[in-house]
Image (cartoon, rainbow, N blue to C red; front, side, top):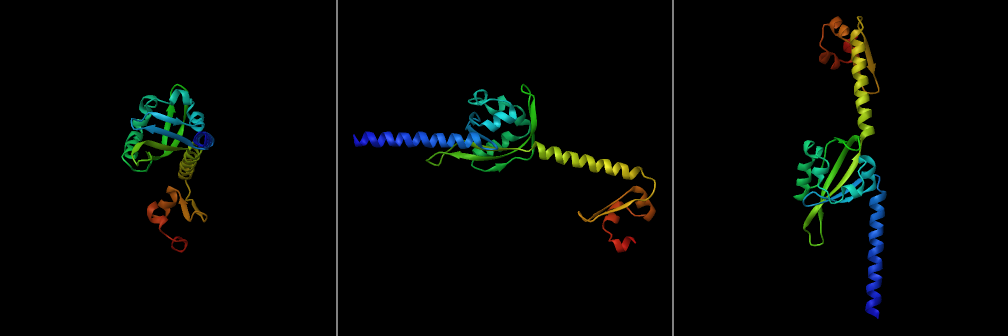
Length: 195
């Protein structure tokens, strides 16, 4: 009877532990995926469902490269192979597009070996960070800077703007011609040199 009681208690604790782990994975504010050694999905959390529009039932058991062909184009296959070989690797900012759900954006990921109790690598664990808002802000900033440069260079008079916050100067082409210096030379000058 005592052995049966211990077995029942151990089984109960195991179920509670599995439930706790499921709750952590499902409530994470980042993508959590687990691949087997052949790059088939074993875990696909709610965050991944949200950003891709692909449900866990559609992803689990499927090969990553068949479900998402863009992973090869973006060289994620190389990172997954490195993780399967025992390295922890991080992807650069990577665009994604899921053709049949029309979901798209940008992610970065960290991939690590998934190791069993005997220390054998049995797959890969991926943590996927959704970075679309940051990439959109960076692109908007780059566009705004390009637009400002275009405006500055259409003004026929010399223009000099000192940006104290970022410790840089902005000049237009007319200002460079006025001082007979290249932009690269101007940027190296101090206020005292220029005035």
